[in-house]
Length: 187
Image 1 (cartoon, rainbow, N blue to C red):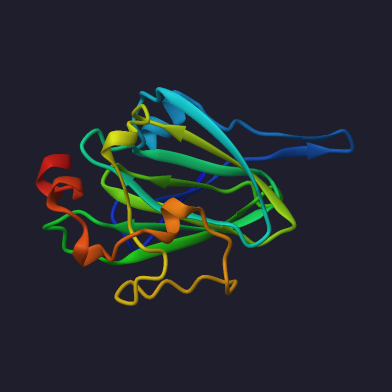
Image 2: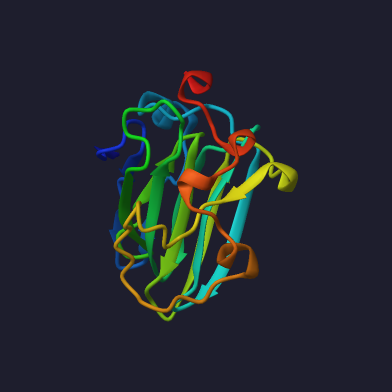
């Protein structure tokens, strides 16, 4: 497995080793031993799958308390996937990293607890997989505005399709203190 560090500490792009021949391909999408060696946690508690058409933007979501680490990948299609450091006190607070994930490149993105996460579908549709380190707690969820001008995320498509929750996202600087992760609490 190839592990690529991003400009955000702890946010990793993972390229599993793919074995292919005339029958198709095979790769390990999770191996506790191998992924732990790359710095990922050994415990995941929930897997989720979403299907979205082109232009849908989901995010930027976080959960505090009970932050979720997420190992994400695309089973069909392609997305532009983004992690944003929203940890108060972090030297990279407000910075983002992105990766294109697709069924063709088979890349995965590890988003540690304390980061906001979102993605935009750039193919006809995308079947998206999330492997989470914490259960979903809707009462602890927060949404940062996908178009926060201070973040200046370079989303590839204009006029995204958004849920009501995502349209109501707040700027990072307006995120309520009780919903904002603290870097020292995540060490």
